[in-house]
Structures are given as C-alpha cells and as structure tokens.
Amino acid sequence: MRTVCDIKEQTKNFLDHANDDDYSDDEDDYSDDVDDYSDDANNKSLNNLSQSFTPECPFSSTRNSSLTTQVRERSFQSINTSRSFNITSTSLSSYSQVPIVQSQSKKIDKNYNNLFCTSLAIIIVLCIFFYILIHNEATQSETSNIDLVTIDKLLDERMHIVQTQFNHQKSNIWNDIASGIYDAVLYPEKPTVITLFGNEIDTLNCLAQMLGEVSGTILGSNDYLSLTPKDFPNDVGETIYNFKVKISQKRVVIIQDLLSINTEAIKAFHNFCDRQRPLIKKAIYIITIIIDEYKPSQSELEFIDKQIFKKLSGKIDKDILDPLVTRLTDGVIVPVLPESSTRFNMKKCLVSKYNRL
Image (tube, rainbow, N blue to C red):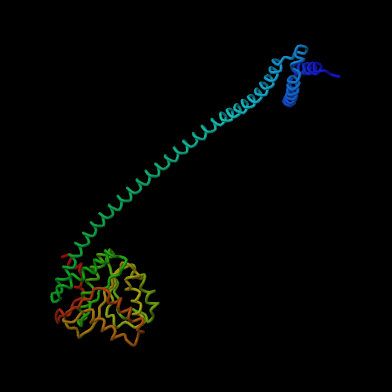
C-alpha cells in the first residue's frame, strides 16, 4: 500500500520533470490543471497528516508556490506579447497611412490652386468683355445722339423750305408732319403713315412730292417711290409681290388718290401699314385722299374714317375693312387747304431746287 510519502515523492518528481520541459500554450493550460489538482490533493493530505507525518515526509511549500508563480508569469508574458504585437501592428498600419494622407492633401491643395487660378482668369476675361461692351454701347449711343441731332437739324431746315411754299396751311401741321418723319428714325421697327386729304389735287400732289423728297433724305435713300391708282394690279397678293422689294429699297412711297385704287389692291395696305407686325420696316407712306366736304371744325380722324368706310363698305367685308381703316388712319392726318387758283408747276415742287438757292 502506497504511503503519503510515496505520493508526495512521486508528485515532486513529476513537478521537477515538468520544470525542465518547454511548454506550449496548450501544455501550460494542462499543467495548470494538474498543478491545481495536485495542490488540492496535497493540501488535503497535508491537513490530515501534518501532525503525524510532517517530520518524516517534509514537503516544501515554497517550491510549490514558486512553480505556480512561474506558470502564471509565463501566461502573463504570452498575453503581454500578444498585446505588444497588436499595438505594434496598429502603429505600423497608422504609420503606413501617413504618406497616403499627405499625398491626398497635396492633391487637394493643387486642385484648389488650379480652380482658383481658372476662376480668376474667367473673372478677368468677363470684366474685360463687359468693359468693351459697355464702352461700345456708350460710343454707339453717343454717335447715335450726334446723328439724331444732325438729322433733327436737317429735318428742320428742309421742313422750313416746304412751309415757305404753302402759306395758306394751318401752322400746326408742319410740326405734326416733321414728328411723323422723325418717328421713322426713332422707331424704325414701325412704319409711319402720313395722310394728306383735300379737294385741290395739284396742291396735294405737290406737297406729297416735297415731303417724299424730305423723307428720303432723312432715311438715307435720297429717293422715293410714287404710285398712282393705275399702277396697282387687281390682286392683293400680286400687289404685295410687286411693291415689297421696291418699297424696301426706296423706304418712302407716295400713294396718290387712295380711294381710287381697286378694292383688291387696297387690301394690301393692311400688311404695309401694320405697325405691330409690319411687312416692311423703316418705311414712310405718304397717302393722298381727294375729297371734299371737310370743315375745319371737324375732327380729321373722324372725317377720314367716315370717308373710307363710305367708299369701301359693301365692297370689302367688314372683318377686313375695320382693321384696314385702323391701319390707314394710325398716323398723321393733315387737311390740305387750297393755296391759290394758280396751278402748280410740278417742276417747282422740289425741295432740292430751293435748297441750292
């Protein structure tokens, strides 16, 4: 039968042998379990037999404590080594990311500098562009103002010549006529209509001719187109086709004896005299209407409206006639009074002739 001393001796030999071997992590765990078991067994045996067997079988508790401490230190060192490895790995990973962050930062700074330079260049170009644009507009405006002053002065001179040839007319008509001609310069998008009406044909035709010459000079064509009722074809489309190009070239057209033009051709004036959507821009239409029964107390506009409706009602549909009359009367309407019983010599109805004197 094995005694307690034999068990203690066997345990001592086993522990001595274990101290001489290298342990793996798994063996350490196993050794811990054996040590715990041995310690428990030894403690119980020692408690029970300490009094009787202590002298015979001395057992060193100091060695047992030293062994346990060594095992725990080894485990602690393993844990510390693992932690140290993780910290080192993290440090290396962080260090490896520093050059990447610095490179990205440099790229961002470079892109920002490029964007700033590009934006600055665009702003400079835009400033130069707007400066040139404003300067050109100011120059054009100044030139336009000078031109308008010159035109206004020339128009006054020419209208004064015309006025001196017609001494029996109302004094206010000359300012109205000059304003109508001047509007063609100020508002070239809209045609100007000047309607002369009276019962003295020669006076009407002479005045219309002189005003045509003045208008051509002001608009720069230095010429005008003169049309009689016989010049109009009996078709609205053909009328527009025949005269559109000519009126565009001359810019000024005299239409003599409007109410004697055939009803189909007269419809073309719906397009010619349209101030909102004109067929020809920057044009002056000087129209003469031979009519009697006018009294100075009457309104010129109302009188001409009634005369046109009276002449064309029943020959042109009302839907067409109403806007046609509106366009024909949307301008300057001038009553022309008889000048004298003497017939005009049309060769004297030239502004340029008097201008050279």
